[in-house]
Image (cartoon, rainbow, N blue to C red; front, side):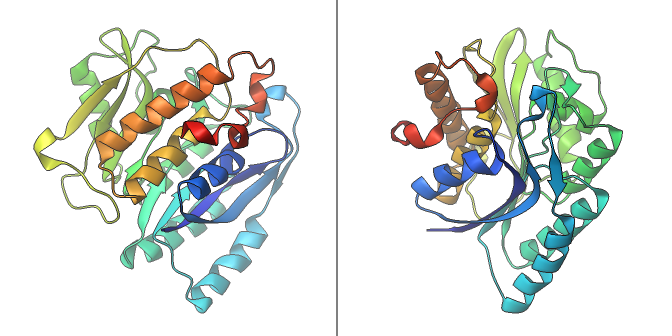
Length: 281
C-alpha cells in the first residue's frame, strides 16, 4: 500500500478531478490524501460557475505537513489557479522528490484544440513550471501542443512528429511523458516516452526502446473526467509495480469499458459515476 497525495481542484457537481481519482486509487489499495487547489461549483462547460481558490489554505497547510514530517510515496498535481499556487506546489514537489517521492503532473488546461473556459496564456506558463518537476506527465494532445508551443493539428501527426512532441515535453524537465488523445498517421492512439534514467517509484522496460504507441478505437462520447480516470488508473498500477507501457494500456482499457457501460447517460458533464463501476477496474 502506497501513500499518495492528490493536489487538484474539488468540483461540487460532477465526477471529475479529485472526486473521480480518489475512489479509484483507494479501490486499488492505496492510502490517498488530498490538498485542494480550489473549490469549484461545477465543470466550466456549463457556462456559469463559481470558484473559491484555496491558496491561503495551501500556504498554511504545506509548512504544517513539513513540520509534522508527513511523507508520501507519490504526489499527483492537477489544476493550478494562480502563480503562487504553482510556485508553492512545485517547491513542495521538489522537496518531496529529494526524499524519493514520485511526482506525477497532469497539466490540465484544455482539449479539442482549445483551452478550457477561464484558461489563458498565464495558465500555460504555470503548467510548464509544474511539468518541469515531473517524473511523469500525461497531457492530452491539446495540452501537449500548448506546453510545447506548437500548432494543434486536427489531422494529427506523423510518428516522427509525435516523437519530436514527446521530446519537447521532456525538454521542459519531465523525465517521462505520456500523451493521450493523439492521432498518429491517421490512427487514434496514446503515445509515450520513458525516462532515460531510473525514476523512483515505478518500473520501465529499458529493452522496449524509449518511445511507444498504443492504438485504440475512439468511442464518440465526450465524458468529462475521463482524463482523471485515466490518470488515477495509470498511477495506481505504476505504484503497484507495473511498468509504464503496461500501466498505460491498462488505463486505456479501463476508460474504454467505463465509457461503454455509461454510454446512455444524458449529461456527459456529470462525468462517470465511478463508485458504481469499480468492478471494471
